[in-house]
Length: 257
Image (tube, rainbow, N blue to C red):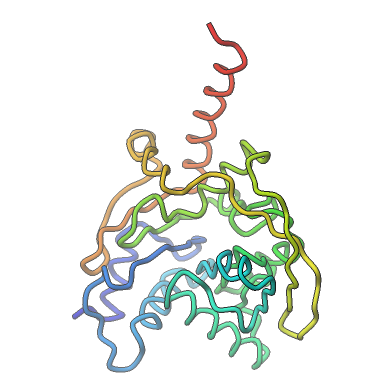
């Protein structure tokens, strides 16, 4: 059984620094048995991650791309993330924090690809998601992982769960995005705004093909958290390495032999 303090030690051993910006994609089951005598497993993991970046930011994906396809409404307080229990608990933490006047835990207002941000600069970091018109715009929470030199922790999951890679696809080939469709977004105060949503244009299943390339570039490294295998990705290096490949392919298409 793994404790919160043990998780903190292991997260730090992955190379996470106190002022880092980090995000995760996680299979909670892959961690093995967690000490839940005082908190739920999801709360233990979130609190351990927060403890490791006291001067930085933790971003928990809270996606609703599946929800808004079925019902075109995104309510920041009530629309449950479609990607697991850790995002759902993070959303509940953000609701409670907002109600007590705490703006260091907030869910962003992206209708399909929201995140819950933890940290003193949380509100500033997610602000531009409220006007995003595509899944991963330059000013959005995911593209800013590059400029913040963030670390992405894939905990018990593979590259096909790395949402950040969609931001590279969007940057290199924005024409591949789906056609926009309307969604009503509701903020913490109940204000409604009509927004548009576009879906990501490339299937995530293909991202495993980047493994050897990114390992060779030193853009990813490996570790353990509990019983889970962890892939740590340097967001900026991943972006630049994959974008260079895209550039080379596009050049070849424009100038075939």
